[in-house]
Length: 95
Image (cartoon, rainbow, N blue to C red; front, side, top):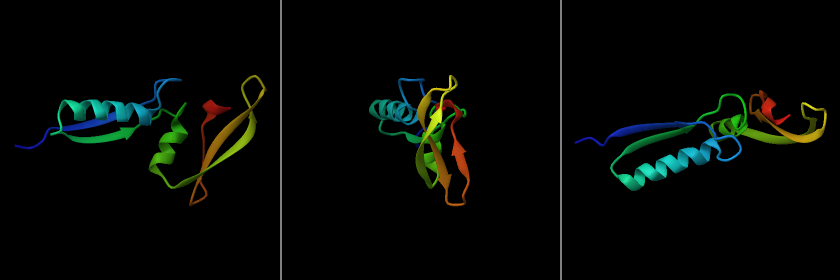
């Protein structure tokens, strides 16, 4: 008999749980329930908070931190990624 297959696709829970942590929590719970499952787990992001973390987990990138301005023109730190082809990934939710 084949093991049941489950695909886990999780976005973050704003301000409380990253998509990677959410994926791990669900995967750990299912594995505790049954060790006989074929689980594929993937973090997701909708372009907002956590998008850089998901991209960084799936692509070869370098993370940079810069000084930026938030929507109220207050200074803040923001991150961006650059991959080996020179493409930049910016998460507008950070600044």
